[in-house]
Amino acid sequence: MSKSPLTYQKERGQSLVEMALVLLVLVFLIGGIIDLGRALFTYIAMRDAAGAGASYGSLHPDSTDKIISVVKSGSQSLVDLSSVQVNVAYTGGSHCLGNGIKVTVAYNNFPMVTPIWGWGLLPKTIDLTTSITDEILIQCPSP
Image (cartoon, rainbow, N blue to C red):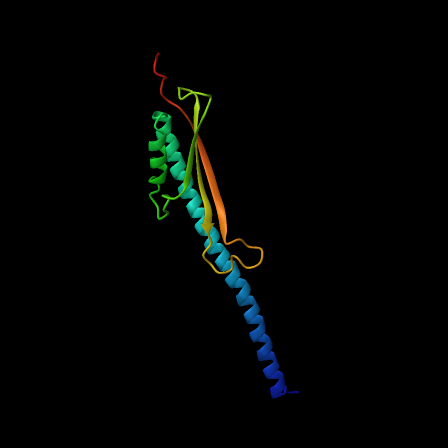
């Protein structure tokens, strides 16, 4: 028994609808992977820059402005860290040997570029924050 031409047209229409639905899901997945990959790449660059700032701060703990400058210019990658917020804090109370220096880097409102973000419950921006703590390696000046 052979199928009628109308049956073939219905099957082609069904296949087209199925392909459209699957393609929509794939586009959402690929867009999410692209943006989350960008966010991870930026986070790693921020973490490296915070590490560079903490390393510099362990040898020059009184140079807070220079530590911030090292962090903002410390990324050797494609990520521009000139607009990140940098906070330098000291643990142990003083800037002396054995105490800690904590460098925190925050990128508020990191933009998601694929159009799926902002639809429904997904935000258009996310906040990225990382911190590194290092030990101060210089003696305090004698009074």
